[in-house]
Length: 316
Image (cartoon, rainbow, N blue to C red; front, side, top):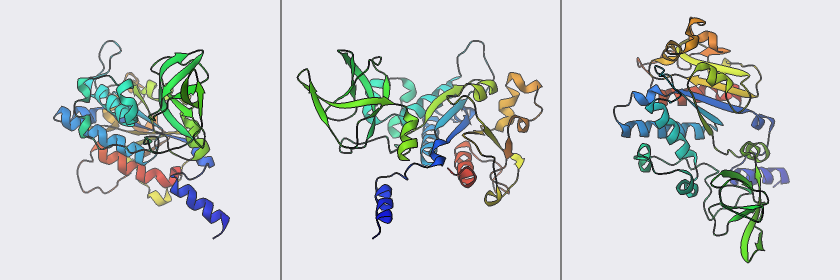
């Protein structure tokens, strides 16, 4: 067997494709929170949110934006549906061993025990070793930070990080421990979570934020803006997925409305006077499922359909 083929098989066995130019790109998906508001119970709303979390992980989504697409209220509070969707998305993305420290008890998490886990690559088990690992700061000692990383030995970071902060750590390709102050530690350093995907090719979870307006959706993301924006609607442009071409991008944003579509988002937004149709908000406005056999496509179905339709053109 050739050395290149053997290396490729080892990469596949480890769950990574190896770093490529495409991995430097990011995919963001915005979802109308009215899909959860439309659920008839808290339990069904939670199950729907869990399905959306699974879809984001399956397609290697880097950011999920919860669109508070309902009528706006005074003040800065989001409605309950947006809060529920955002919290469950964050809960599902957080590795199990960090949840007790990072996620306080709340009635919104009442049905999270019923949800299918993401089983994402950054949800490492205690028996697994990988050069990066998620952790939470539990203590500071002598100008250093102690982190729980879900192993029998904590990690030690050479800088002060605020208590109870979630961090992504580089812990080395092989396990190496040191003894300081009579205690055993794994030496580690804090890195940007996106660096894991860029350097190893391994998916490392998604970030969650809430947008209360269209302006917040486009301008308040972590990437300094998006150079490709795609809206989805049954009234959008019809193009076969095999023929779809998109402009080159670094940060793509895909926007999927709730049960009443992106028209409902625009109807409840201050910018509605400047835009007669949601189509004018985006670089492309696409119908990802033409000739549908049902009058309606549910949001959780639309997310899967949309990401599968766009996957070849976006080189996801």
